[in-house]
Length: 354
Image 1 (spheres, rainbow, N blue to C red):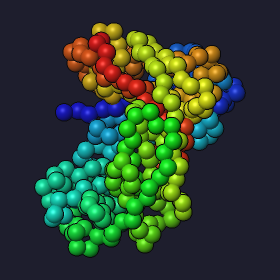
Image 2: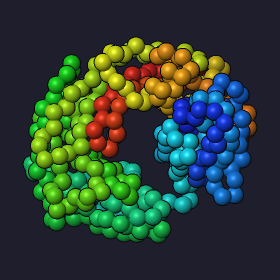
Image 3: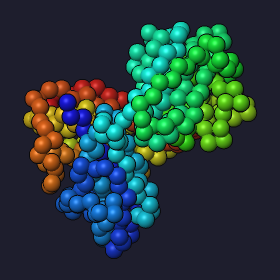
């Protein structure tokens, strides 16, 4: 089965007549829109970049990632000299880490391990160094960390977290703004791109002991209530988590529109679909459309995010595939901050028949 992902990114920051250079890895297709002009496909240069002139104050970039289900969609800078797109490695480039936890524990790396509930696990390794976490929930919860595992070859590694895992202390944050039952969670991001959820609880959550944390790690504590979440990077004192107010969003064929509390100073809006939005077809690819307040202001879009019919854009690969018409699942997000640390956001979603 072919797994593909596509992202459309609308950005601002070019004042006219500037060169947009996009450093890019492993795309199947790239298109650029200058202002309100037509989308134009671009071939990737041998040096691994796309370069084009931008004459308007705003532009869009669309690209197709051909690879595993998980793909990376990078928020581009407003600086046209600092734009990077990275697609995931294809499935044949991934290696596997296998082993035992015994008893069953959760295992994380750059993705979540399969089969960990049975006491054995199988985890895909990303090319390059990988950090792996084994989390044994309980009172107390325990954590075992293995750093810089080589992702260039298949490996075996047992993770006896019950025997050698460190006991995790707990943090009890203060939560304000909740309008529904609260769920807390804690997580970790590492410089190698690994991510793991350390625990979930309505009152207090575990965090790594200091001896297991590197300066480059991001440890965060979050609270979710209904469709909204507030998160803070862990510091010396337990955080106060201010959950934002929910918003209302509607989807039609060509756009997502929303009404939100004006006190929430959002920094990024994005919509996700499990199939390209078109009136009569389902492409079989996932679609993410991102934008910022500066783009909304530049184009006078109000609280509206356009959703291009990606399959109609020029140069779209004809072998990307089309399936039968079916309901398309969608989610829309308003966020501010960094998902690795201080962050707030809300989402709304549903399904719509195409």
